Structures are given as structure tokens and as C-alpha cells.
Image (cartoon, rainbow, N blue to C red; front, side, top):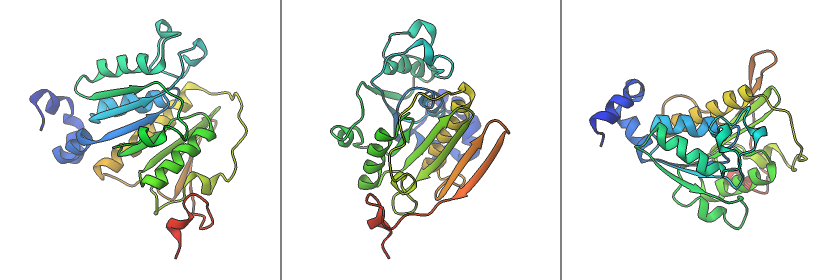
Length: 244
């Protein structure tokens, strides 16, 4: 399953979860929805960990205002498609993995095809309209969704396992208003790294997941808080999964 180079590359994490865990990572396909502030650290750490296939999806081009936080992209990448810039760096980081890039805006019309043969979806979006599209696909296809969101110095993460946890619609019944919000690069880095960690833990079975818990990060005080969250049995997306 692994050549000598791979065994050496992944040696330190094989010490954690063995070749069996590493094999699970190699066999997994993960959809990273968005390749910006959250998607950059998510994709970097999943590629470094040896996820067998990453499907990276984004429709946007690199802009100079992205560079304080979107660490996959450099000044030379300005005006390039984010998935092109990102694939280039990720393949350099780990040439042993497969990376599929998709240039599209995620919506109800393409979400079914985008999530075919996907083991985990990672929400690295910056708007709730698209997050709710991902959420509906997660519930209908029973695919785990790792949600993350950031603003300023604050961030949040939760892991959604359909039937075992609340979905995003349980937490946010309406779409929050769209806005251009302030963001510090390190905030996106912290939250994105936690999301990547959740993916790795889910696939390998190592550690506790943030299922039924919302992890809140307050960067101004360097504090984490975990809040228990419950499914809404009246939720129009996942309520039927929690009927007694």
C-alpha cells in the first residue's frame, strides 16, 4: 500500500494511528468547498497528511486583498483562478496525492455531481447561502460536513454527522446578512486547521469529534468555549432523521 518514501513522509503520524489509519487517509476523497482564508490551511494540512484525493472547488480569482489570509496564494498569483493556484502549491507539497480542481460556484444545480463519491465535505465558504446548499447535500447523502466560519478575531467549528448531530439549519434558521467583514489571517488559520483536524480524526477514528458541540474561538482573549447543541426535531432539512 505504501512505498518507502511514503512511509518515511508520514512516519510521525503513522506513530499516532498506524499504517491502518494512514491507509484510511490514502483511500479517502474529501471535498474542500472554497479555497480562500479557511480553505487554504484546510487544503494544505489535508494534502500534507496524505488524503488520497482532494476535490477543490472555487469560482473566484486571487485578489490582492486575499493575501493577508489566503496562504495558498502569492502575489504572483493575482488574477489567477484560486483552484489553479492552489492545485499548483498542493501538488508541490505532496505529489503522491490526487487533486481535482473544479471551477464553479456551488449551487443547487451542481451540488449532486460535486458530492459524488465524497467521504467528507469541508465548509470553507464565506456565505450562508452556499453553506445551506452544502448542508442539504450532507443530510440527503449522509455525508459528514465539517463547518467553520470566521469574522475578525472570532471563529467557530462544528462537525455535522447526519442523524447524530444538528445540521446548520438547526443552528441558523435564516440566512445571516451578507457583508464584507474584517478578518485577521491567523483567525482563519486557527479555524481552518481545526477543521482539517476534524477531517483527519473522522477518517482515522482517532480522537473525539465536535459532534453536537459548537467550538467557539475568541482571539481577543485567546479563549476556546464548547457549547452543546441539539438537533431541532422541527428542522425542515434534518428533522426527519431525529424523529422518535
